[in-house]
Image (cartoon, rainbow, N blue to C red; front, side):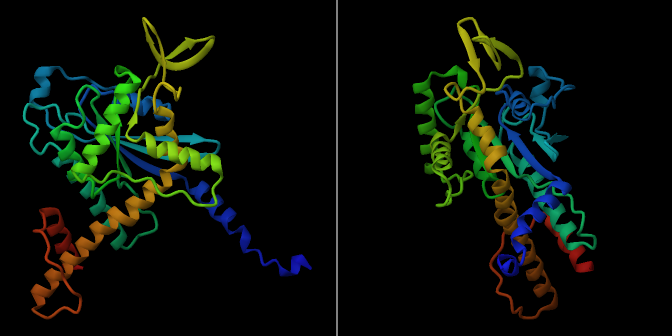
Length: 333
């Protein structure tokens, strides 16, 4: 009798699961911050890969003339049959110059270019196999040696916060004692509020989640910005082999939550919030970009045809050359 009442759409999640596992996942992570804060080490620690084998470090003289560049590393990782195409976007040279005026421009341009490319592909004929290179998350490394945020940190985050999910991190947290870390976190949180910087907000926990998950979620929210330590070396501690840093006075364990927030960051980034980061990128940041593009196209069409458009058009900022090109293409189509 129960069988007769059972239609079968309860198996839909399994179908979706099978399909997405077969297709695989992609994730684009940007790392930014001045050089020497352990960005590469942290990325290697997070994904247990070695992405920076052939890297050449520049000396001070070479860095004077160096501009901010964008370097992409793509690696395919497989775990328990689930494939992840991970793209790391690195920004060497950021914040290293004598004059850092607008040193974030290449980075904002890169994020916009990825949006533009996706918009073109979406408006094109073959929409089946669109390559998604939009930046889903930006880990921004804050130096532990200052008293909170520097002007370049504030300006960088303000230039990017409407375009990408920013997750601020306190780098090389083993330089600070626990009370200093607490003070610095408090200070950074205050400054983020004061300057109106919109960092990535963890979504609210569903009421039907179990208590343990709710507790984890609370701890995550309380420990932002995460104080992290990276290490690619395995050391012996209390008879166990752990990833950590060996100092003359003891061992800092990367995956020990009493030592740093590395595990919290990894859990947030990979195990609990990766999909939400992608959703926010798609539904908020990309939608804003897309709406702006469509608005500009509509206003241009209205000007060209000299007719009253039924669509209300808001005053817009002057379009940049990339958008101009895009509008031209759309007009030709």
